[in-house]
Image (cartoon, rainbow, N blue to C red; front, side, top):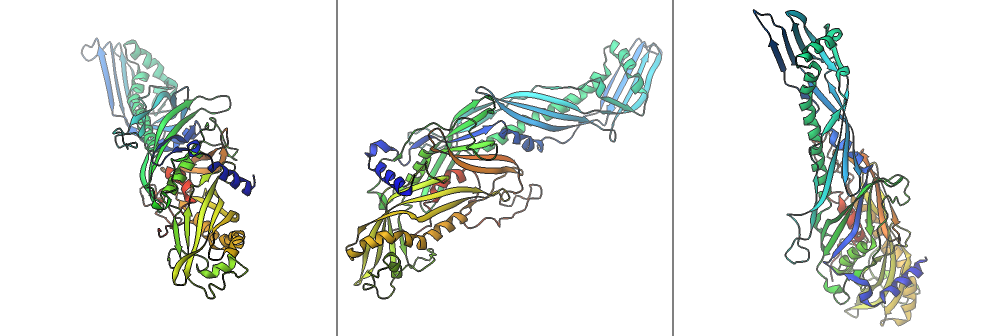
Length: 600
């Protein structure tokens, strides 16, 4: 669709009755505006996360067992002694997967258990006597072949009241929720048996079966007794796995609950929390997945500069999210996906607009302006190259531009960028001093298209936003020009040239400076990220990710993380303090946050 046609359709849409579109007022709750999906492969990262938290080695306490019967004058019908010391158990997590089923998750694990080694064996003393005859009396070195432990345990995810929650609607009840993860202690199985025993430095290897038959006859199995000493150590390690996974998942999911004020020139209160959990099993080639839908409430004080234009809320166009397993056509197989509805984007844009984020008084004496050329009446030669204003301003004089946004920007799902934002009725008033008075020379009302693309750097982990703006995407109309009406048509026709010179460099630079640094957990983070328009109606933005061990680390100075440095050189002045979900939720506002300007 051409830019002009898109703008025309946009303008026509705004001409509909307000009740047809306005359904999300500032401060209201928008349910399911963002949907997070984690498939079975996405949960695979838990192996790396949990593996470092398992005790590397557990020492088994010394063990002594002895019994005798029918003894007389030091001789017994049978007698045995077993002493075991120096045994240790090491468990290495090979695989930890979370398998989505029907409305439930199952955590399955496979681990390798090493019990001593040929280089570091345990000490085993065995004495056995039968009918006053010594069958065995020797000390051995003992170690085991690796054995394997497996377990399956259910995981439950429930929405729970948030004790630190927020009463969004002011009815006295906290609206926000949190995700509660419950994992019981697993019941495990292993493949250890008598064939895994290795004896060194003694003859027991050749006679153990005979000795064990004798002791077993009297109720004592040597193999099982030794295995019984290993089990508490394995118990402890297995119990540590859900004990490690549960807080990791809860901490991760807690980042989905946000309550903070974001200052983008106006203070916007963001509240985001999970409002629905859906678990689906594998269907054919589509992996099973966990989906978490989020509710959002954005509050901002309505600015005086738009008070006359504010209606009843942002546009609502209900639609279904993408199906489970949607990959958006990206070049890799996603493990984690975040789907953003255009209703949420429009709600965020409307809230920012209602807060006055687009109301600027751009003055030549503003030190934060940093324009590529001076903001003075010499610019009129660009917008009116015929020299129509030369008689009024033979010499360059200070000038300012008043930005008067009459309508909220909205997103265009049919655009060519990850996010295309349309702005209609953006009033730009050019003001200068004429005959000693500050006078509005003319006003242009513009309709514009701005493109926003998400760019991810896999080497640094930085997520930044590329802003694409072009004067050719502006349709301008001169709505006021009483000072010099003969120049009105020329001003409207040349406006795009002025925009390319004056504003485009600032906006492009803004995209480069808005960088969200990486977020990692113990060296694990996002490996790949790409975005695409998706959904049955094409009005959702999908952010598709693959996770794993990463070459970058979070900015900051947590030197406890295995030698990680405190390098913050990649963080420019536009950096956020973290690369968490606010990076995803906040991006629709970026296009509006050109700079913090002096308010009218």
